[in-house]
Image (cartoon, rainbow, N blue to C red; front, side, top):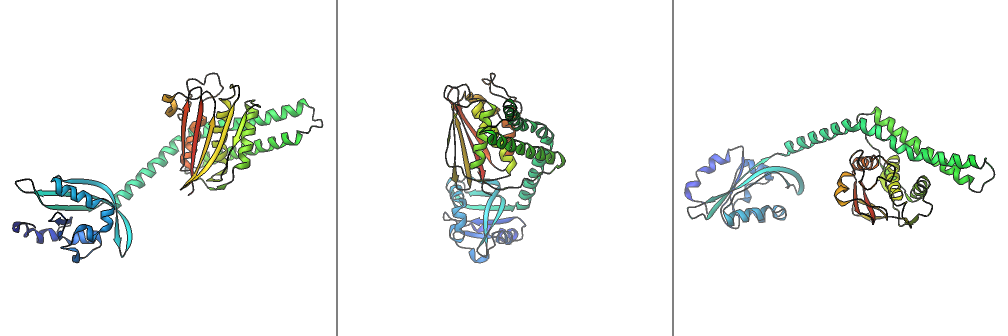
Length: 363
């Protein structure tokens, strides 16, 4: 129990604007709580005299009771800032953020006889800080916009190359009857359609300083087959063995998906092209809050110490010198995945191959 000479503080603390509570026993009995703390907790004075964990079981589940017990046992105070807590108001949890301190009050033998709990609601500060951080991210995005707009031209090369190969093939056959003619024309149509989407997106990015991507559920089974076929033609790897698993639809912006998948598939095929038996495996899986896509090849691989660097603009792996490229592709892929609120992960072993995982959230 609290010493008598502490009771005169009750009146002073009760009118203090700083939310304050005092616990005076190992089971964290609430000996005192002022009006500011009652308001913060959405509670009334009936809680006085009761153990903290009994009154606030949700705080126990969140670990606050454990922290208080540790302070009591050790005599060491605990302080935290910008800490999230759910306050129950009329049975409904309300997320708030607090700066708080559990101050251990000890006697001459260093035994704890009370804990002074003070707290400040910093929710508005937290929200304001998050808003500022969001604005800073938008500013950083705008600063990179010009660079990204310029590098998006990189993505136009693949469909242009496809169109040229197709046209050349038709010209060499003098547009004679050919059983593959329809297939070639289809390839041209798809390539030019992709090019148009990229040009439209580049124009949009150039004109809009605040770009908002529009997501929808996009089926990928047929598209991936087309993108694989395109890459095989570009890098002239007809012997490529492709194994496709279950290909789930994802929430994304359609033309952005072309840029992401064509880069990943193109890299896998390009850097496997010199293998005797080049292979590419693609499959997907549903996870709790989204979809993962996996791409596995048996190409030249990436040195382990360079994996984090391959997302930088104009950065290529040190062992890729024998292959054409400029290091822009994965830079763009990572930026697009961030815009989609997704992620990209790369695992690789030199001379064994590379596996790329793309995560697309459902929201």
